[in-house]
Image (tube, rainbow, N blue to C red):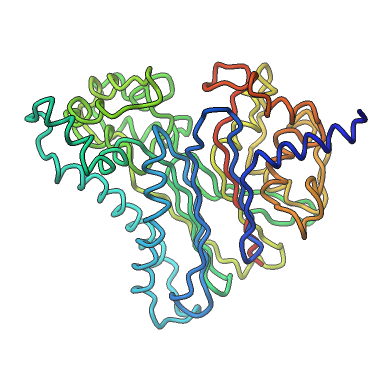
Length: 413
């Protein structure tokens, strides 16, 4: 079989494994998890809101669930409506020129916080004193009609979301956790560049590490352990995760009883080291971008989960011995261009990439093109390896570990 035939077969197999969707407005999305018997915990949202002010607004979000899909699914189904209702009330009757960006920024931040608080309140209202429950009572709670209330509080999810007004002159982005939102624009050289718009909320970010340490007494020794909060979570802000936000009695008496697909999950760290909660924050970061000043640079917005960062880093896939040190936002922003710096891309991936990887962009899914180039590009062998069940593992110690990966692309001009 020729190289081109092998690449075509690999490309077809890869695209068949992806769940790719194209939405009105040339918005493209893809989500991917090739490991057999593993549930993809990522979720995403693409919505057009025609009842805000003037032309329809667009709301986008990606959610990277952990500890189960319950929080991510609940947020996918309910958070957009929560924000939409508040926004509709706040800007009713205003035109685009009358919008106060700071007011919208504050609304987004407060609504995300209120939404998360409501998840915790639902638990406390049903179980105000978990330590007073007998075993049979506690078990009845998590298996009864309100079981989902406890499951969505126990699991968690990151969030990055974007709100674009009807004129496409105003952009707000909001985030919790280590998913990414990136703005890609064309530079003077004609090469696209990517800029990360929000901080990665994880222990590797110095400001996040310092914030958590300063929020708790110095005698607490295990707040950060093995680069994880309480030795468990690799993010410092999230929706859900109320084992880290409520007192340890909730973990000991309620949350430990919820079945998990991670039998070795160190929940004892949460119960033993949880002295001054919360340890995980639901205070989001919000940023406003004036798009009117960027129209000539043909801006494109990217939202993606940290599976993209892990693939570009390469330490769990093809670059275990020499991980890539390039900023993933820069790489992803450049891959959206009409021309590429192939030397730069070779240095990043150690494989070649290809414009219009899955066909003409006018007729193909751009998010799937990005993912295909990131995973293997024109290297058919690499593409087939990430689709081979025998090579794929459930954790980062295995030969090949592909995290749940979701990407949304949205043109802004």
